[in-house]
Structure formats: structure tokens, C-alpha cells
Length: 323
Image (cartoon, rainbow, N blue to C red; front, side):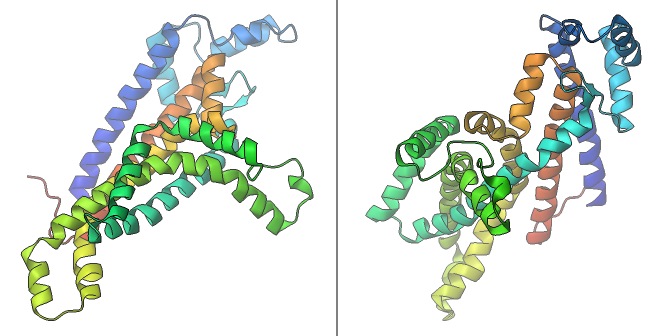
């Protein structure tokens, strides 16, 4: 297992380097320059611009700039945000919790609903209720999440039951602790639903298929023949085997939600990394874009690695060994 982890970490490091290089070159190929915004500000002197160019090697070729950025990034220096006029690490720190809160809420809702729903659908195969669930799953798999968000926002505008975007209400600072929590949860409902409905539809179908396959195994028939209760057969023997393949999706799902939340954040005006990334790309704030991309890639790699380790721990039949 240790050898497997070290091998995966080495491959992950190479992937992150390639991803960062491609991102850097794509940003450089777009028209304009990330100092153009500063040049249009009459309060910023030419000496300040020259200082930035020298500090971040902006007067050097693109490859030299990238190597300089990568060397600083490894040392913990994420660069300087020219748009926000503060270090990149401070900009990301101010938005990271918001994105994590939204992604974790969607992740929790997805798994708490998809696993029981998939199991329930497998046990009622062929009935009209199960067919209705599968039809709704097809619908939510086909509809983009941002469109679901827009429909939910339209519904909220007509009913007034939920806020129309953002993270806090106008009177948030005047509320008590319980009031602030309720206000935050109300603002979370629409982006969380928009982000998780498609994932629920996909995971419950996988869970249903796994459960149906496991229920047809000989050891399930043998367990029933030994007189075990149906509940023990289903929820101790069958459910554990059906859930194991989903563990590989665990890390991918969570890291995918972190990156997939960007568009939902923009549609619902949620102040997270998605809105920050859009602003950074528009302003050609290259160091902010690079740090955001590296963070998303690192979360994706770490999530998948943790999922592989969890699968090996959950299923003793699986062993990672290299020759």
C-alpha cells in the first residue's frame, strides 16, 4: 500500500506540473496583459509597474516566467493578485470556505439520498414507483445543473420561499446565532439542490445495478437458505458488497463537486471560488488563475487517492501491490 501511495503521488505531481504549464501558456496566448488594468490606473506609477515586472520576471520569456512561478509555488508563494492588489493566498482563503461549504453540503445530500434510494429501487424492481424513480433519474441526468439552478431561482422568485442567490440576507448581521444559521441554510438550498440532483440520479442508478447484481449471487441465496433474516441478508451482506464499488467514486465525486460548483456559484451568485475564477480570467490575473487551477487539480488527485485507500480498507479482497 505504501508503494502504491508513493507511486500515485509521483504521478499526481507530474500531472499537476503539466496542467499548470498548459494553463500558464493558454493564459499567455490570450490577447492583452495582466498588467493592463494597472497601467490604466493613473494612481499607479511606472516605477511600481517596473517593480512588479522585475519581481515576477514579467520581462522575461514565458518559459522563464513559468519556471519562476513554479519555484515560488513549491515554496508556498502563490504570487500576487494584480486585480485585488493583495497576495493570492489571501484572496483564495477568503473564498475557499464558501466553496467547501457548498460542495460538502451537495456531497452529503447526494450520498445520504442516493444510497438508500438505489437500494429501495432495487428491492422494488418492476413496480411503478421504481419506474417513476428511474424516469426522474433520466431527466436529471439529461438536464444541465446550471439550468436546474435557473429553474429553481425562477420558482423562488415566483413563490418567495427562498432567497434569490447570494450567501447572506440583508439583515444577516442583525440576527442571532440561530437566525444566522437559518439564513445560511436557506441560501444553501438552491445551489445545493442544483449541484446534487444530477449526482443523485447517477449514483442511485449505479447503486441499484450493484444491488441487483449482488442479490443474484449464490452466497445471498445460501444466507437465506441458512435462515438468516431478510434484513440481515440485505443490509449486512448484500448492502456492503453493493456499496464497495461506489467507494472508488467517493473521492472523484467530492473533488468533482469542488470544480463543478464554479458554474453553479456564478448562476446563484454564491461568493466562492467559481465567481473568483471568472473575475480572475476576465482580468487576466494569471497568478490567481494558476493558484485556483492547482488547488482544483490537487483536490481531485487527493480525493481519488483517498478513495482508493478507503476501498482497500473496506474490501479485504482488494490489495494494491506493485511488482
